[in-house]
Amino acid sequence: MKPAILLALTLGAMGAARADILITPSFIINIEEACAVEQRVCGKVSYTGTSKKTGQAIVLRGKTVEGKCDENNSCDFEGYIFKNGATVYRVTSDGKLTVSQGAKTLVQEKGVWQ
Image (cartoon, rainbow, N blue to C red; front, side, top):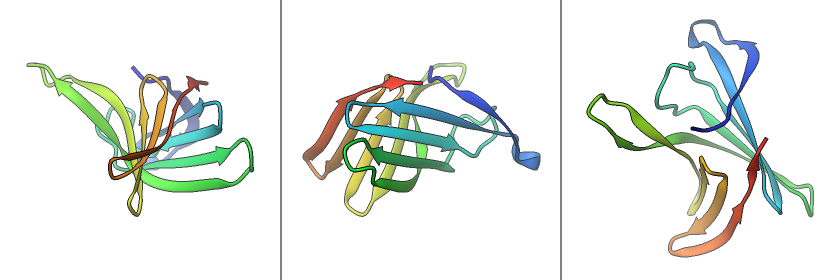
């Protein structure tokens, strides 16, 4: 299960937002979900990745990714996916960041959730 910090942010009928921070050797990644806590799948997720080396940041929109579901329709949370043109950013629940273009991996780092 992913770590989550419940923010004291009320979004009316939408419920509370959730935020996660992943620290990798090269990046600080802030992920925010703007969906109700009880929602299994969220298509309103933002990614802000800041380079530790340059301080430059990229902001992307994406969604959660589910894995296998059991007979009770309970599904494993796998992480998030974000796209910037042909570049795909994947952040897994165990803290792995993978940035790829097609079959080419540009970045692959393991981080720690804060």
